[in-house]
Amino acid sequence: MGKDVIIACDFASAKDTFAFLDKFTGRKPFVKIGMELFYAEGPSIVRELKARGHKIFLDLKLHDIPNTVKKSMAVLSHLDVDMTNLHAGGTVAMMEAALEGLTRPDGTRPLLIAVTQLTSTSEERMKEDLLINEPIDKVVMHYAENAKKAGLDGVVCSPLEAGKVHDVCGKGFLTVTPGVRFAGGDVGDQSRITTPEGAKAIGSDYIVVGRPITAAADPVAAYERCVAEFVD
Ligand code: C5P
Image 1 (spheres, rainbow, N blue to C red):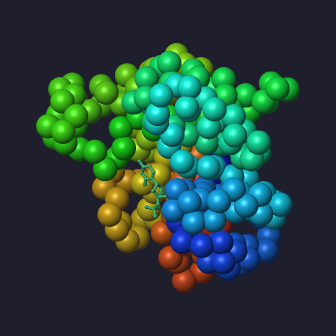
Image 2: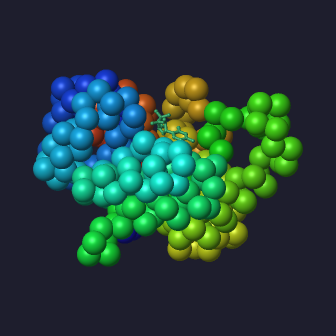
């Protein structure tokens, strides 16, 4: 799969999601379904969006014992999503089990991406709450290497880390990057951000964009601007 813009559909219901996506009468965007929407609507939301022609990143960030994650990933493999994810903090064994569970009998599977350290976790919190005393950059790169070792396809990271992840894990290892804002746009609660053009220059493979598109006066125009800056 090539570079693409993924819209974070952080809506509370299927009704709100469809009302938003109905505006896109041309190109059908790649969409991210997170916990809020999935827990509210269940697997039917995935099937309905798939039937409407969208590619789907199912962002459920699994983290449990390897056997439970493997069985859960096997269930998700039937949903026919294009990308899903887990926490690298669950260990290499958990990631390997996840990959095994996600692989269908015919050998096909969605892309599997690891969350390294959440961008909401500061180095200070990591040290004090989690007792991890290494610098956060080193931890993120180590988790990325673990994900690669387990056979995963890439990591979720800040666009500002995408270049280093490619240096450490290779160009083919995917970087899926939230934290994207238009130049001069509202930053909101994100901190380590860049523009779609900036993410392209650093080498992100997929950008995940929420509010700059979902809260725009003209979401379709905002999406097309992202595609023009990042993909074209
Ligand atoms: O609205 P905004 O563009 O900030 O949305 C970014 C999306 O990416 C949200 O769904 C958010 O939960 C998600 N995300 C993030 N940072 C991470 C992982 C996921 O912003 N490290």
